[in-house]
Image 1 (cartoon, rainbow, N blue to C red):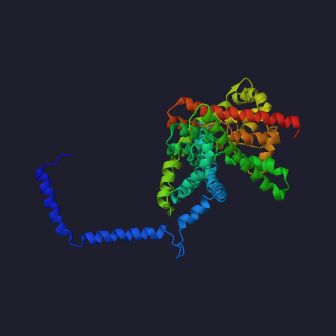
Image 2 (cartoon, rainbow, N blue to C red):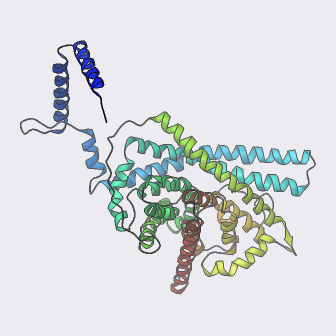
Image 3 (tube, rainbow, N blue to C red):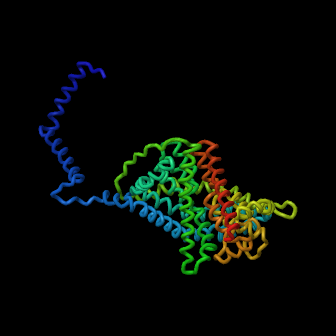
Length: 476
């Protein structure tokens, strides 16, 4: 910087004038405030031998939350509490939404179609296909997301989630991944699409791709109901009534832990093959604990995550509902397209311990895992001809109690092997179309989107095949 003599003199004159304005004790006041602040900081961080140490909330909490023997158990306990609040808290609003959208609005729309003398096929296509699939996704997805995301964000705002990343960093480092993947993996338990978006916190492109591809192994809220229902009907029934609930819950937790193990295993595999490289240095400054800003958290969680993800799910559910209705009501010969597909898929499905109905349900219900069980019910009733259930061909439905579910599944030829392999395939299969679209938007690359879709399908089919063969050989 070049300064001429005139400017230099002007600055000196200005400084001289200001010196008189600030007063003659300015220097003393400045130094006194500096020493006071230094003394305050020293009192907080320095422990003297002749005085008892001051209680420090941050340090005490960190000893518990990041301790070698306490960090992981507390983390698992907190996540279980969040899951329980999400599942238990979503039941009532989900039932209210389902009552409104499925039991009230849907019949009203059908009555409107009859009043307007709509052809049966147009009324069925619009109200039983398109509307019903969208309404089902909204009633099942909205309440758990509206609970899970704010709870998760409150933990983040409190400063706990960076401690989770700190606790799991060494495990992810051994797998060639990044410690922050623990956060995106946890977010995936609410919604995989949101988990994919949350990988933006990982700076390394290689490690972010690993986190994106493996996020599908976190059971999203759309798959929890399937796991709980199947475990209750088939696994819990193996134990006396008093232990039935515990055995069912243990089976669901075992599947969730299998997902965590697959996350580490697949991350390690990717880091040694397609995404070779060294794990980047993870420098994390643990933030101080602070009271969460509840209103801001609710706003950001509902707008940035819940509404965005829900809207994408609805957009993909609409064409899926149309396809489900069309293939169930268009006939080739004496059979519908759905029945032809079931017959074609059945041999392969039985070989891997599933059946053609389950495989077709996972194909046509790709927009949202939430509609897999209603689709299986509808296809099973249509293909077996069992009477007394459902509201017509191509119309998704649910049942009132577990005995009705068991009756329909047994009519479809389900066994304990079918239930076990369905729980495994529910964990290990392709992401829903909402998640796949999010992967494409985040990576901007079709190759990694295809890898994210194909790899878990191959893994899931392979695992089901070996489980089925071992099951049959050992005669379990």
